[in-house]
Amino acid sequence: MEDKIKRKIRVEKIISVLKKEFPNARTALNYSNALELLIAAILSAQCTDERVNKVTLELFKKYRNAKDYADASLDELEKEIFSTGFYKNKSKKIKKCCEQVVEKFNGEMPSTLDELVQLEGVGRKTANVILGMAFDIPGIVVDTHVKRVSNRLGLSGESNPEKIEFELMEIVPKKEWTNFSFMLIDHGRKTCTARSLECRKCRIEKLCNFDKKYI
Image 1 (cartoon, rainbow, N blue to C red):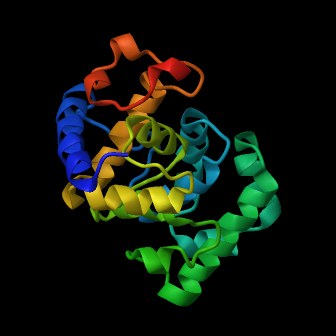
Image 2: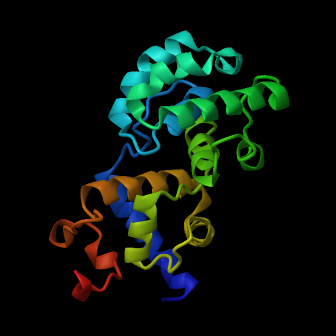
C-alpha cells in the first residue's frame, strides 16, 4: 500500500469528485432528533431504510422521548416494529437503551462517542452516525459499503471496521469525516457494489488502486 501522504493527496481528489456526484450524501433514515435517529438505526439492522421509514412514521408520533420507550411494554413495541424483522431483539434493545438514556443521562441523548457506545445496541458505527448527523460532530462511519470501497480504493488494508475507521481518520480531513463516509456508502450502493463493479462508469476509477484482474 502507498504511504500515508500519497493516500491523503488521493483522498482529497476522491472527495472533490464524489462531492459533485453525491452533493447531498447523508443517511436515508428519517429523523428529527438524535433519539429518533438512534431508534431508526437500531431498526435498520438487516432491514431496508425504506421499510424503517414507514414504521417510524407512526412510531415517532407515539413515542416522543426516551421515557416513553422505557415505559413501553415489550409486547406493544414488538407489534409496532414487527415488519422490520428481528423484532423481539430490536424491541429489547430499544427499551434497554432508552432506559439507560433516562437513568444515566437524565433523558437527554448523550453527544460523545464514549457515552453513546455505553448504550445497548450502539456500536461505533451507529454512534458516529448519530454524532455526525444529529450533533454535527465529525465521525467516520464504517458499514459494509465503506469497508468494501475503502479496501478496493486502497485507502485501507484492514478488514476490522474499527481499524478501518482509525486508518481513514488519519488520511481524511476531519471536517469531511461524516460526509466522506456517506459518499462512500452512496458510491458503494450505486457503482462499487458487492456483486458487480461498474468500473467503466466510475467517476473515481483513475483514483482507484483496485486490481482489475480480480474482477
